[in-house]
Length: 319
Image 1 (tube, one colour):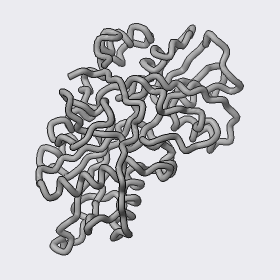
Image 2 (cartoon, one colour):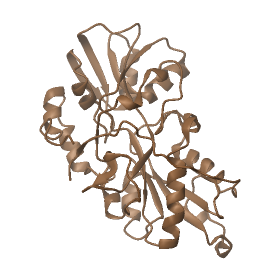
Image 3 (cartoon, helix red, strand yellow):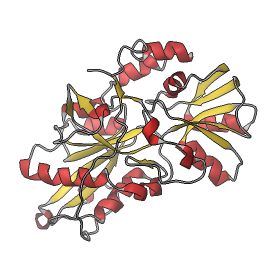
Image 4 (tube, rainbow, N blue to C red):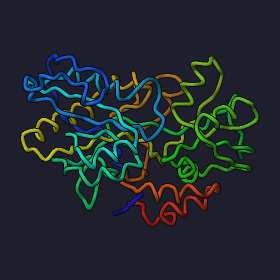
């Protein structure tokens, strides 16, 4: 499998969606909380949502529950449950849902994902077939108090367990002096002390906005691994067709996704600092099926160029 993929400029999938008011499904919950009289809900689909990177505002799982409660086609209803990466991996040993919403670091989804009946995004490909498409995404930004002078003397990098912001820095050819990485909240706190530029995400922009801080954000668009994908995992043919309609719906939500503080897979519907980001300029991403072990090996380096080499010997895995 190739690990670093060329994305398609037109990320949005072209679908015509017809929908009617839906039955209200509870927000993200455990399957055991579903009504006992389940025989009345034969057409209920199950979707597991997994957070593997920081979002924007609120819960992506709750958002999915809300929008899918608003969607119904031929009596389709969807029950959304939220999991950690580790929890989902363990639960898959005994049970498989109908769909999974996931990000990078969830390589185990490849073992249960079914082939989708369309193309549209190379990041979700395995051997030429598409197994997952993004329904929302984040983005990387250089954040400073008053603007950025080049080269950057001190760069603090917000680094989650599974994301690789220094690859974004590498492809954007950022010139820097001293660079250090920290977990997202720690990096944000260090930035607030002053004197450093933050290589962060949409989440940091929302943090600063909520705090009433003045700042300037410069988009880093060439590389992004902050994609939230959706895959169909049911092997039931009847359910599969219904899952396809759900996937089509999720990939065409447009500005509804703004409620999550994330970007829609179909475009940027924000103003202000977030509005600067052009999602169609993103040229490279990692496969969401990249193993967690490889991600950790890549992340061992603090040096941008060395990390890029570990990300597939620089250009080797670019498609």
